[in-house]
Every structure is written in C-alpha cells, then in structure tokens.
Image (tube, rainbow, N blue to C red; front, side, top):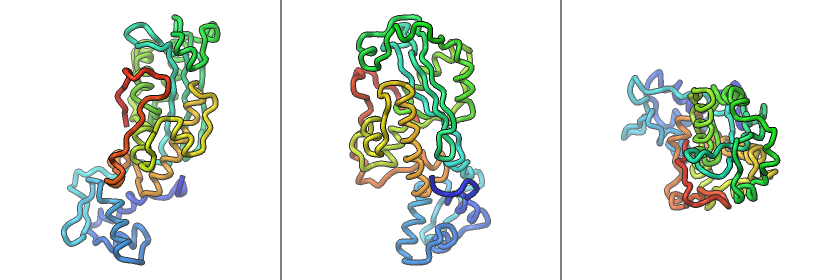
Length: 289
C-alpha cells in the first residue's frame, strides 16, 4: 500500500490545514497535494479528494472549510488498520433449520501484508448436504474428529476483536460467525465490517462482475483451493490489499471516507454478481460495508 507507516493521509493533511481556518482551492492543491501546475487539474484533484466528504464544505468562491465544530476528524489511516478477513463453509442449509459451519478461516492483514492465519475444520454435529459436499469437497468423514465450534469460539472471538471484519459477501459470513459466537459464548465482538463486493463496486468500477472468481482473475490472484475457507479467505485478503491500495491512491484516507466514496456516474449502471457459482439464488444475504 502506498505511503510510509508514519505518513499522514491526504485527508489528514487537509483537515490539519483547515483547522486553522478556511483556505482556497489553490492553497490546498499546493500544500496538501503538492500540485503547482495546471490550475484546472489542481482544482479537480482537490474536489475529487474533498468534494464527496461531508466533513468539508466549499463556498462559491472556491474556499474550503471544515463543516461545523462537531465535524469528525479523519480516523486511522487505512494502512494502519488491522483487518480480519473471514470465510466460512457450512453444512448447506439455514441456521434456523439446525445447519452449522463446517470450516472457518481468519486471515489477519495490516499494512498491506498478511500477519497471521487461523483455519480449522469444524464438527457441525450433523450431516452436510450432498450439493454442498460436492461444491466444497468437505465430506462428513473429513469432519469426524474435528473440533466443534464451541472449542474454538474463544480463539475466533480473539482474532476478530479490535479488527475490521472483512469478507466477500460479508453479510453471509458475519451472520454465521455472529450466530455461532452468540450460541457458544453468549457474546459477539463489536466490529466494523467491510464487504469486498461493495469495495470493488466503488474502487474497481471498470469490472462488470465482482464475484470472487472475477476479482481474483482481474488481480491475477490464485484461489487455492476454491470453495474452501482458507483458500477463499487468503484470496479475499489479497484482493482487499489491492483494493485498499487503490483507495489510498485516490486519497481515501480512512474508513469513513471509504464508505462515502462514489465512482464517477458513468460507472454506476454496472451490476454486481452477488452470488457465487453453485449457491442457490434464493440466498441473498445483506451485504455489509
């Protein structure tokens, strides 16, 4: 990811400059973006950085200021945030019908690199549906003797707490993890969540499809093995790093700005492929940021 570990984001620089008072666009371009060239290009760059962020306001004369005293300062730089990239496999049905996870992987990312990985099969206490076994390759025989989720729940909780929860189709994975943590421990960590489908919609608008295979192919990232928790989570972690690198190059400095960012209007008619090949269309979980 761009920038040194101790460097400020462009938003942090703009915030620091405007805290002392309003400033014209040209000054922001020069002091924050280090642009002294074409005035039109410099102005466009400032508006691209600050224009979609409600914390900043510009008047008719091109003078910028912080919007109100209560406006929130930029948060921790994206490259400094710890992320927990998660993928789960299940027995193939819904929670309320007694289905449970068969595999979980948590890949920890900070500063653009993987710092640790946790992965295990799980004994769900029931049989896996045939279609799911064919898709994942996880058989009942493989799960015999694996730990139950109750046995690893505290480890999973520890690896998620204090990190940003990331998954491809995050509503699905978070829903399962949350449900089984609550069942096992009676508690769930409070985490912010990001979905790489939504990130790709904003940060890779040139792509028509944004399922995991399409993103991995676009970024030349192998998925080994596919439809297994550790293979999918490892690939998603590498995709996350590439997307966050794009975000920093766009001057997106923190999670708040990342959520607010929108690509140019001409890209907005592109559709997402929310479902992975082989999964029932009726399952369309809510997608989190």
